[in-house]
Image 1: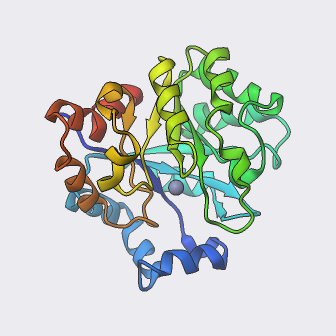
Image 2 (image 1 turned 90 degrees about the horizontal axis):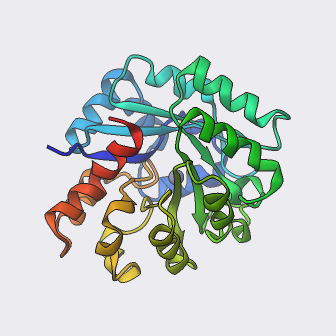
Length: 273
Ligand SMILES: [Zn+2]
């Protein structure tokens, strides 16, 4: 059986986030702090994933002080310790530390992180800028995947120009052995670019978190052609209905093989599960 993997779970205490993020989450969840803290315990998260039909989930840290808030690497490492179904991904903010590569190496070799997520629209950098290149070089050397937010962000202070997936063309060419995930697949403006890059580059994947799953084939009419390159993620807790989204994908007019790959097969390969 192919495992079901949610590649995009924000794992932290949301009272650390800015009020406008809390307001947004409150639109779908009545009492977000209680909701999130109930689930983000060792027993709570295991139960939540099981109830939603998820075998593994990637737990994301986020150091975005000017836009969303801080979900510390230490907190995510702590949450994931001893929980086999959680896979921790660290956050490195290029404006908060000097030695980006050293920081990443520390998180991976000393703290057990198994991937990196970058937030260009929240931190205000182009993903193909020189400043970020040492991070890619280190990630390639360590053999870990890198997720990069592409497409729209609704939070105050985000700058959408940094979300153009085309910036990742340089990175894909310069780091051919580095696995790159285009998070949100260029949401809003650039679905065509994300799709084309995933089709063109062996090391580029489309991650579909935060997209309404029933619209997937409207956004990507030829999704089946990149069946090996599409990765499911929920964007929990902002998108709380993980199990329902999985069911919607299961109901799309795609082959069962493609659905299995999207819902976990491709991710299992990337994560070495
Ligand atoms: Zn997210």
